Image (cartoon, rainbow, N blue to C red; front, side):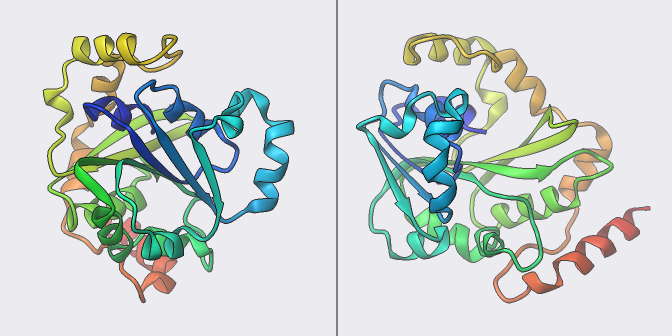
Length: 245
């Protein structure tokens, strides 16, 4: 979720992370030597208060990094009042759950505000729910939402947490197919103090290749997430699943 967007940007200096309370997300971003400042916004201050002590394998000391600023706030409220500009924005949210405050961070209106906070050439990486040809309607709906805001939106599939999960990369310029495996490997070796334990250029390319059914799902002309209609979420997703059978 973090590294593809960070590696794609030519010089990521200023990053914003919304969510990611346990600290692993900010640690991955701060591994880039080019990063001068990172702002993390999370609504759950109680969670973050215990993570530095109990989840050290996840955050690796990132909370104490002098480049890092932690803000306890609702992500939607923050982005609507923030005036800063960022090279990379990472959205690491909880899953779609009815009545969750995170629902307001999935809508078109939210991503329009995110785009306003991007510097020229900025890029966004998003945790994007379960994703497979058999269980991907919410992911596809989020992808369509982003496509209503950004020129380039690309899905990637990552096997983890006992099933398939997806992330999305959104910008007005980045096309994964144009980013060769060797180029990504070279950037990793130049920018990061140690090699990545999981991601390689070839693996990233493979994650962006979808089967025919997943491609059809992503290409479908269906609803998007918008303010004021998130209360119908469960019914909408159930209807999309039924129509696909």
